[in-house]
Length: 411
Image 1: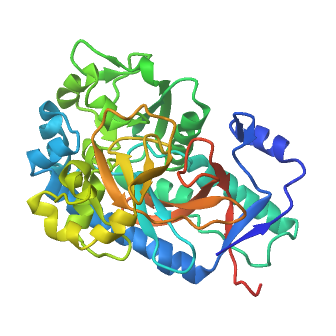
Image 2: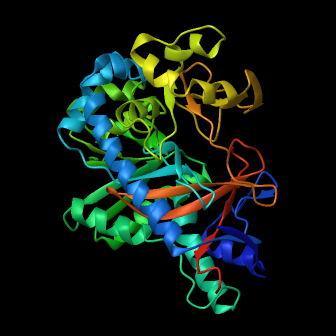
C-alpha cells in the first residue's frame, strides 16, 4: 500500500460541478483530494480487505441473532425498552438489508482491524461508487496511471442487482434525507440512481415532508402511500421519535431495517469480541461500565468479562480508545495512553450516551495524513472501498476523501 502524488485534473472544478458534486470542497478546504492516491495490490484488496470484510459481516449477523434475544444487552446498547420488540421483530421477519460501510485500520502489511461498522446511514457513497471511478477512467486516459490499473469498486452495480433481487420491476420506492444537506442528498440520489437502473420507481422527499395518514400509513408530500422507504435518518433517533409509534402498523418496509439499530451501534464491538475473541480482524472491546474500575490501578472488571479483559489488560493500560455507542465523524472519541487522554474530538454532542472502550490500532501515516479504509457491504458481500484520511489520529468531519487504484508495484 503506497500513497503516490499524481496530477490533479486541470478542469476538476468543472467536472465536479457537472457531476453535481457540490461538496467537493467544504469549510474552505478540499474534501475530494486527488493530488495523490493510494495504490494497493490485488492481493491486498482481495485477501486483506474484501474477504475479511465479508467474513466480518457474516459474524455481525450472528451477533444480531444473539442480541435481539437479550433485552438486557439491548438496553446496554441504548435501545429504548418500548422499541426492543420492534427491533427483534424486524430481524425475525428477515427484513432485508441493503448496504453498510465498515471502517478498517490497515497499513498494507497486517490484518485489517474493524474500527466500527456504519451499517444504517453511511455516507461517502457517491464519492466511493461514482466519482472515484470517473477519476480512474480520466487518469487512465491521461496516462497518469499504469496501464491496466483497476479499482475495487463494484458498488453501484451491486446496489442495482441487490435492489433488483429485492423488489419486482416497477415497485415504487421512496427516498428521504435531511433537507439542505448536500452530502446526505448525494447518498440518497446515488441510491435513487441504482433503483431507477434496477427498473424501480424512485421518489425523493425531504425528511420533514414524511406524513402519516388517518389510517396510520406513511405518506409523501403528494399523499402517496409509502410502501418502502430508504431513510437517511439513524435508527437511534427514529426509535426515540414520535413517529416511531406509527411504524408497527404502517405497513412500510424500511431500508435499512430496524434490526440495523444494533449493528450501527458501537455496542456491537464488545459483543463481537465476546463471541469471536482473538479474531485477527477484531480489536478487543468492552462496554465501559464493565471495565471502568479495571482501567484504574488495582481495580477489577465485572466478573462476566474478567477473563477476557485480563488477557488484554496490559495492552489497554498502554493505550485504548473510548467511544460513545452512538456518534459520527469521530464525535466524542478519545485516545487514552498510559492513563492520560492524549487526543480527543472537540465535538461532544454524543457525550450523554453510554461508552465502549476498544483496543488502540494506530492508523498508518502517509505524508502527515492517516487513512481509514471504508469497506462497502452490499447485501452480505464486500463489493468496494473508499479511503478517507485525516491529519488527526481520530478521523473527523474535516477528513479528506482520497481515490485509490489497484496495480502491481512494478507497474
